[in-house]
Image (cartoon, rainbow, N blue to C red; front, side, top):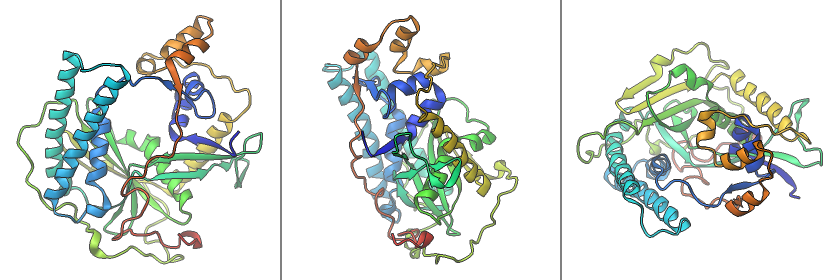
Length: 380
């Protein structure tokens, strides 16, 4: 037994979607994952790798031509790694013709989208990156005693862990969370983005991770990669972002009044949206009450997750089950059979080794938004 009861962000999402899938996969439950990767190409993962390099704080003021070359390489390297991993785990020497064509299209289509992104992003990037792919680890508050942390029935502290896409600082020295979203089909209505929990959870967790720090809201950086391949050749490199890194460090003294109001009123999201073909940027300010309410919500959810003897019923739907890696053992259980042998032969235990370090994730930028000030009076 470990000293901490750890809930990765993905386990909470699984719990809210289908308790049976959560029971089979969660770190503190079955801890299973499929023995072999299912996908030979995942453009969304490749784009996230590319954006991690594009928004690396240490290169924000570099010559754009140098950065764009590295971004292209990051996209291609991730696609190639996916292909090699799939071949290795399935004992294959090459993809079949249909898979090969899909991989080639993802390569060519993705690179063409990146070229157009290089032209569009500088027109809307009124920000300076601070951290990319950074991880957080926070304790969950006790719903009955908010000043104390939640513990399991056997006395273990409950920790919530996750990873943000991007933390930025704007020209007014306000911090924002950015989520890169890969969209299939039309962009969703902007009011639905306010209901999205993923980025909101980062706001709450990051403020708990750095007491005294304020996150102003969330920025959704959306990309549609299911449309036609954009025309045009390589982008003409232009200077990125209206907010430079070299304006000096951000050091708002602890205790100084915040320059923003405590609450956010009704926001016209249509005035905070920038759209250009397959790209959309939506800015969603978050009220203090909204962030606090999420903390109350997750405390209640986690309390239920750690309850002994919780019933793990399935929640089937065509949309949810279509991509679920536990569909076969779930059906076996529905038919009244024991899936133990299937799980032992076709699944492995999830690894929880520390994530390899990544530039830009463990250390704050050295320019604007540099090391955090003495948030909450703590030396960092």
